[in-house]
Image 1 (tube, rainbow, N blue to C red):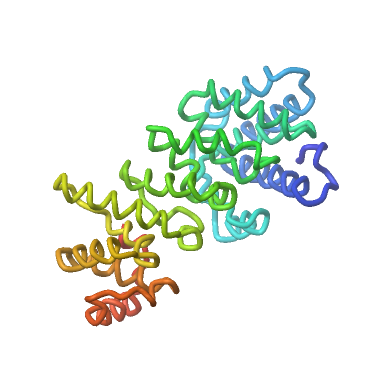
Image 2: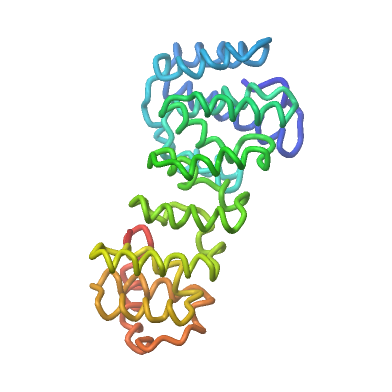
Length: 301
């Protein structure tokens, strides 16, 4: 099953068509025959609707009709998702989230501007679980640039699940956010106690301004007697200035094994090789441990 509006298209349209085909298969597998029947009718109703009522009703009914079970995707499923859209990772999606994203995509009538307005309107009035699902669909929607204001609003949210719906396992911010918005998203993740490792393109988009912002955050936490996340050094070490070097040195000297492992891992960034650190001679054994035990950022979060 696919939305007839996208069939035989190319580029973005072909991706939308391919996603709806995947969604149909995965909903049938997770939601059973009755769930698949409801989903297909709901998609058809949305495609042929003369108003947005059908979309609103279907988005609201999705958990009741399909449940909230995890998709439980296998390796082949994840490979198909990545082949459809680089960076697309629905590994931790639930079936109702998948259906809600598919329903939103099916509402596209050829006008990216109209779709962006519709998406923004639904996000403005959505309850929490609806908003999380709709934000997770950002890398799949047409007219990506038109959706950026709503995406930025989501990462400013004080609700951690909404923030993570955009920031985690999502290629949209790394591709679409300007440097300032990107930097504030990364700092916000640490500020609210969220992890950095699920943020895609984190190393590629590290920059000197972000490093300075994170050093300021570390100093504020130290002054308040609060812990500093070991992940913070990932975006500091490659671009550390004098203040950054001082902060890294303090973290190295006063930190535990996890902190030192994180700094050693951060220094493996190509830009980190040129940073003049007074403790660089002590880093070798930690690099060896990282390699021997195959320790990555997820392990250190």
